[in-house]
Length: 561
Image (cartoon, rainbow, N blue to C red):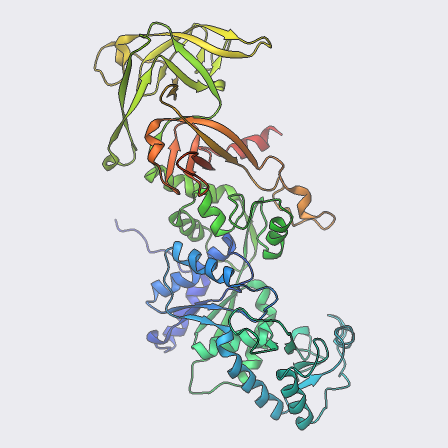
């Protein structure tokens, strides 16, 4: 039985309807248009996957366009980071574009609107304009400069461009309808004076176009057919169309703006402004901190492009906003790493274990499968000796029958090794257990084929040989916020919900096969979770980030509370 085709989302239905109505398939063109004022986050990943996914589906080009119209906030660093993120996610853009490429064209079109009596220079203060614009329930009123002559407007606008006026003295506004029910149509600002250097045009311009004037016109210049925005831009569509109506060539493709809902992620924030606060206040260690929901942060934490694309595909495209539980994102990275990550042994909270009947100078190498999910991954050898580290929580002096790990008088199997029995333990002066003494069954070696090797015990523990173990720094990451919607409280600042335990740094011990691991290499520490080598690692000091635990321990913790 063949697999049923995947249902179309509402954006794809719109495109299919356009094609059915005669729109030529080879004219389709999409774009991803970030503003380079910060690093991309998981919300942007959905938009990237949508636009580039449509390009793949319809064999259509996709532009990467930077909406760089605000020199105060935009930097080349962010441009470079955005390009790196899109490439890392596995997509290729057709043309790299910048709104700043069109500054002269946009200026020329603005001059034409002035000549047609559809734009004017307003010399009111921002406070005066806010009052004059009215409220959502009260119409605006015409300002004192709305009926300036075309000649005066042209002269003033030229003076704005030439730097003759200070910031805040004049703006260019579209002349539309001050009584419109849509406040965005009440003579919106098209240009403001900003005497700031631009990351691409330097000081060539001292006036900069506003987003609403720039965006639709950039779509038109690039002949984008479907301009896909998040839901907050739905009220802007009327203005988007008004601007196009007044500059469009009827023989060229007219872009169509359509909106989809932003998918928010629980226990985090996806506002660039709020993410910037976290960086500036030192609550995280930069935009690529592995606790951040930025693509660069997720990459550094050990997420894969495949897992993020799979997550975006699962949550899909909708018309209503909702909060997606971060555990769904974690599910997708677990699912992918389970298939590709080599299994290794690492002990994060070490307790010394001595096998008293194992010869002191003896050591042997035990065969271990690299990944049971991937037959081609092969095997490796792990050193075994008399003194080992196990996890402290894997041993108790006394325990009930439901505790299947090591306890006095009880037996467990050491992974890929022998069955051992706990005989005694040593404590420090404060009563803390510092060493466990065990005996082992020499005939119980895993894979040896002996009858004893087939004997079943209920617990299996991971371990590392002390004299062969590599000490490493391990960074244990948790949710950045304790609240599911930290920015959803009217009476509290989102920073009040920052999780004080979102990062714990410990020293762990790993098997020697990891000595040659490279930055970004990913592993499953058996029974402990998935980890990757952090970029701060050096040959002298290896650093591992915990990408995700083996199970959703957070959900279990919340139930207890």
